[in-house]
Length: 102
Ligand code: TYC
Image (tube, rainbow, N blue to C red; front, side, top):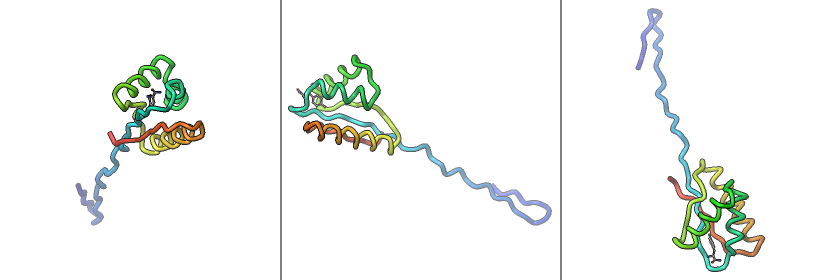
């Protein structure tokens, strides 16, 4: 939309181009070796779950093959994935953690 003023100037309204940031799901994948207790600890430490919620998510991953830890903006999701993978490798576990655009 443009507004023409008497002095000849024209004001052009800039279209709003900002989109809300894309959100990403962070998922844990099942494997046969990572101890259940370790997964529960990861969910408590990095995804702020209480013990009860962490146990439910861990059991869902164990049963269904994957489960959601939370939904975050891209940089936060990717930092969480990095931290979880690094902690798991240091502890010698093959736990997989991935992110997926919502
Ligand atoms: N399946 C593993 C076991 O029986 C437990 C496990 C749960 C591993 C969730 C990974 O993301 C995972 N020890």
